[in-house]
Image (cartoon, rainbow, N blue to C red):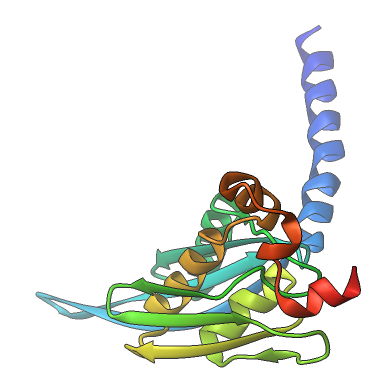
Length: 189
């Protein structure tokens, strides 16, 4: 009987593995930055790696994770796992964001501005990775302050997660939905 139970458990595990693989394939995982760090010990330097990973479904959800390990693949795997755990839904208005926002994390400051359809992603480095993984197609951005990639990525993530949904904001203000929408989306309705 115990041998039969073990076989059943192994079959279940085999069936679950493809689902996990499919789930990982659906998500867009990007390694934004790899840094080699050194710890000085008695025998010399001990090197480790830090990976900044952005994961998104290209449909309004994005997560950022940082993985640290002695080997690069292990750091990337840890960063990807943390990014999946930190995934948040972002309010979107068509292919852009609902309103302008300035977000900062540490000394990094990022300006995110909605753009009319057809503009594309006007962003550099870490900001581009987060915005594209989230599935935003039209946006204007400017990275100000610190150029530290980790802080720029975290500032972008903080900005996107603190965006307000236009419908909820209109209800909170007691105004019609049209009055809180960007001008190009008003003409489309």
